[in-house]
Image (cartoon, rainbow, N blue to C red; front, side, top):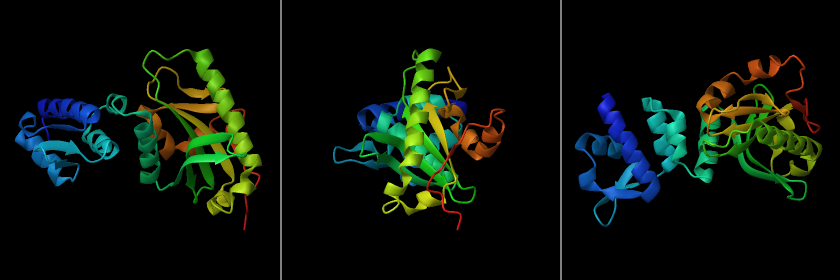
Length: 228
């Protein structure tokens, strides 16, 4: 649909819109403006500017066109980054709960995705770190803390059932850290560390990744799982 030159122009426009939310109509080539308008991704503001409707929706659109996931994600703030992760889960037929608090609100999981078919749930912390943030020791500590937090979620699961009944359909919680960059990845500190670039593939094949661990300790058994 777009030439490589047009895609580059679209990427530059996305960065501008992400930062300022609106740009002058004259700054946008007709082809790009018509495409964005037809997809209901932008609107014309009162000052005759072209304004973004949803940064996350536009990000998904650009990724679908072939733009680099990491490049697109860099222009998202941390809330948008969490929303992008949630959108990916939804596209893979997960039921999504955002900002789940538990244990008297002392702990929070950024995004919880429940797959009722496999009875698996991914418990995700999103880390929108800068490219220079890549010390393995620091990430290992954060991953270990996240696993401990998900273990607390399993222990206190029954307290959440009145509001989130689907938690009883989860047999295993999988602790995951989703990062912006690809500096550290794999099974680290008891959690899966997954760069956003590889997240969609990971979710599509999560059971394979879980079963591939020789120690078999990747998942956390849900203490409020109801087999009926």
